[in-house]
Structures are given as structure tokens and as C-alpha cells.
Length: 139
Image (cartoon, rainbow, N blue to C red):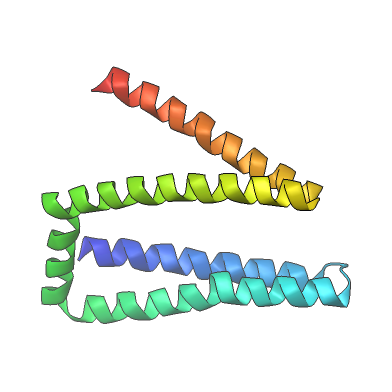
């Protein structure tokens, strides 16, 4: 049940950030096209997922047996190993995709996009190296 309560609090915070951001977008001094894009992005990204998460969390809290099953399944050793392997594979694929995107946008002449992707790629690699050295020393 603690897991369901934590998830509920997370999604309430998620929705609150979306509401604050949408109020800022509505009352800020932006052009209409930019404001429309920001508002639709906030609604899709924060508010919609937050509301859906709140609904799922409340349904989970109403069924304590299912909440216990979900919490046990989440903390199970096999599930954690699968999650670890999945995260590693997705990270590797994303590095290759970002590298290809950086190269492609650079060749097509989109300098800002190329620099942004290259910056994100560089930050990811630096963080990856930092976490590897940290975990090598820790374990």
C-alpha cells in the first residue's frame, strides 16, 4: 500500500507542476503560436499523464490485495534484473540514435539541432563514465 501512496503523491505533484506551467504559459508574454505549442505540450506531458496516474493510483489503493501484489512484483529480484538489463539496452540504443541524429543534422546544416544533440550526447557520456567509476569503487 505504501507504493500506491507514493505513486499517488508523485502524480499529484506531476499534475501540480503542469497546472503551474500552464498558468505561467497563459499569463506570460508569448506569441500566440508559441503559447499554443507550449500549452498543448504541457497538457499532453504533465496534466494528462498526471491525471491518468492519479486515477490508476486511486484504483490500486481501492484494491489492497492487488496493491500488495504490485509492490511485491516491483521489488522482486527477477524484475529488478530485467529492469536493469532493459535500461542498459535502451541507453545503448539511444546513444547510437543520438549519435546518428547528430551526424545527420550536422550534414543537413541544422547547426542548432546538431549542437543540442551533441551537448546531450556529451552530457550522457560524462554521466555514464562518472557512474561507472562511482559504482566500480562502491562495489
